[in-house]
Length: 141
Image 1 (tube, helix red, strand yellow):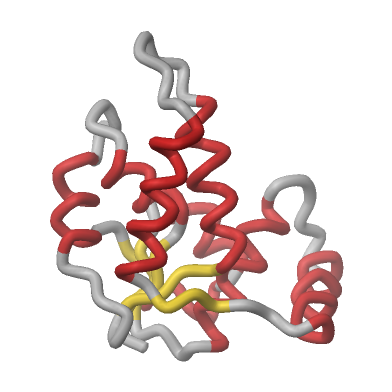
Image 2: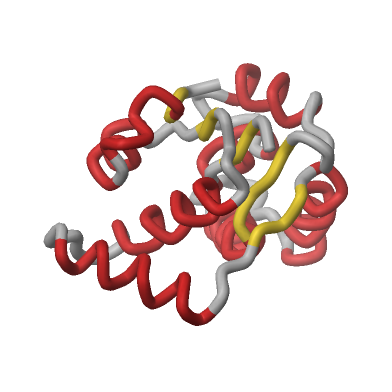
């Protein structure tokens, strides 16, 4: 798999008010299931984030679902087995990762599972801290 998308990039593509909207949109618009992937959990994160944005015109659930469907149309969806999920959590605990960093660790495990050549995120610091072995593959769009 060539590229793996973090939720931050997908939200950036779908929300015009995102500071990195144009760069995210260019990347996501060119995505295809043959070379692009994201985690199954990312679908829920896109929905949750889009419906909770502090914007004047709130994004309704049916519109957020369209963004989820667009993601499914453009990306291969990666899931972890029960053992892979637990292993990722054990590794995170061993490294002292806390709170929401576990979600990033799970996303990075999905990226590693599909051997993504590049992981796109707007959270470089968090991702590179979690997986220093993947630092050269973790980039912004």
